[in-house]
Image (tube, rainbow, N blue to C red; front, side, top):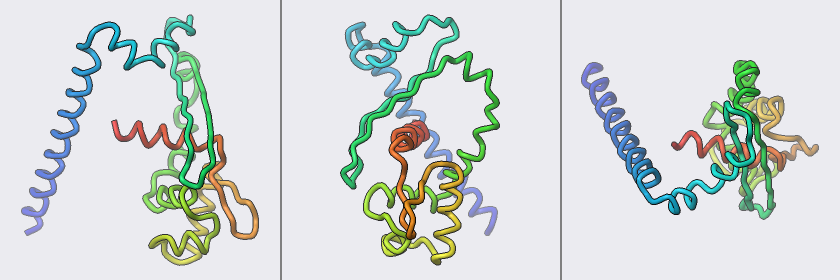
Length: 174
């Protein structure tokens, strides 16, 4: 029985991988085989970055403007050369990424951006466990800088973290 379940799980994962590959191939062919004008339309931010960067190793740009469901509008941009990125210790980012690597914490962030500010509102908005469990997850997010405490059991996602969070989520989808 367990072998059968394992086979079904593997078959499901293979189907998901095939679907993602087909989507990637479709988006690549749409973006890379089109005319030069279309290329500049699709990759306008990339083209602008390449014009601004003289470093032969390249650069990475993260930018966005968003109005979250609660109504707060944020604009944010960050750029780094690829050389600078490789000169840093990738592992030093593990704690911050680890804080996001839990489904409950991601859902907490979503609730804080959409319809909740307090632990009570968070608990009412979904199945997040006990109050103690909610505080445990919030402490992890606060320690990593993804959430800020406003006092009296109220929390928020700092404006400077909203676009990076959305970029990370977008990157995971690709």
